[in-house]
Length: 279
Image 1 (spheres, rainbow, N blue to C red):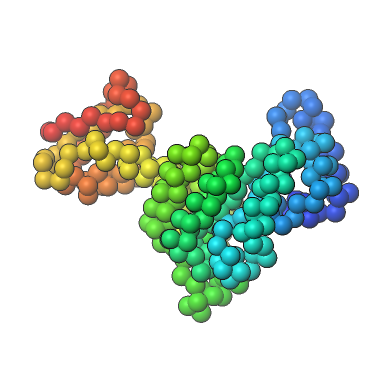
Image 2 (image 1 turned 135 degrees about the vertical axis):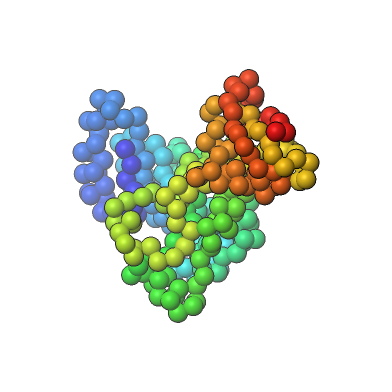
């Protein structure tokens, strides 16, 4: 059970207790295993955290978004990177699991700044991370900035590449990335709702496929060695190597110079590996 989409710990404490009390019987009956909430790094009141703990809240996710203070200020987030560091410490002290939500592509952000954010988050060692590249939504101040030429969002390709690199770094440190890209919703999918930015209904899959292909680079023949190849891979990794609408096969062609005429299943091949045959 999750309370998302707002600052849960800024609700009046009576409202928080009412919500938590309403779900408590279902938690005790075993319909779900725990409760999680999302909130701001600078909204961690000790009394409210104690209340959440008493009702079985296990995980608190912080909308950190960036660890670059100039990016946070320009984006009018209202908190600092130090608030994030202190927030993680407070949550650890209360025994919560900690999630961190990040938004590559905020105003004033850059590739090197976001890479620095990832390095800072790794030092905080959260239990999980979510990556939400910024999209421009109708009716927001960011939409006005975009129309005035004051803001340029990440391209889809840049967002996929940056999230793939970030995910690899985080998961090498045993910090799981549990979601990438905004979740689809009826309101988000309304015509004209998303004005610009790296929106894609399968963004997370695009990133996971890219990560998979990065891991295969040592398995592939060099460019010019063959014009046609056949790929053998374990059954569960067929979608990853093919990619979204077979874009992965086009990526293989770009790297090897060879057309992939067939992808075949071979479950004896270890995970993350392929066998390539010249055709």
